[in-house]
Length: 140
Image (cartoon, rainbow, N blue to C red):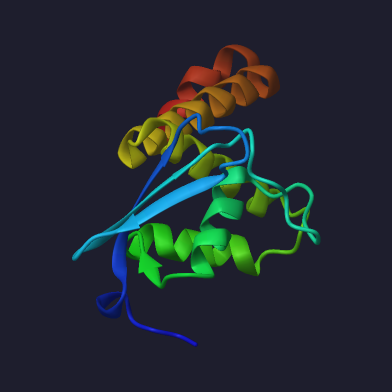
């Protein structure tokens, strides 16, 4: 069943240490759902042993509620779910969501990703082109 974001409550997610045997807690409010999960206790689903804890927790909550994290994160989550198990894109999206849940800072995580990509790109250019790398990097 598909619903529009307007019909779903905003989801607020955080990672925390919970008591043994307590995997997730959630509470519904008028305008949002707050969910906390313990990444050390989230079990992988049967078909995807490599699944990120953040995505497994969201799937568990999805059995009880329809929710949204906003259009951008919803689209990323849909991309994660549509990718085949073992896909590098699926793994990357899972890592990004794990980090967002840990830090509570989607924009900061995006900046970290950009910085990592820029560092990797700079290193690749330096390896491939030696002293010409700074000029090539300036060209984009």
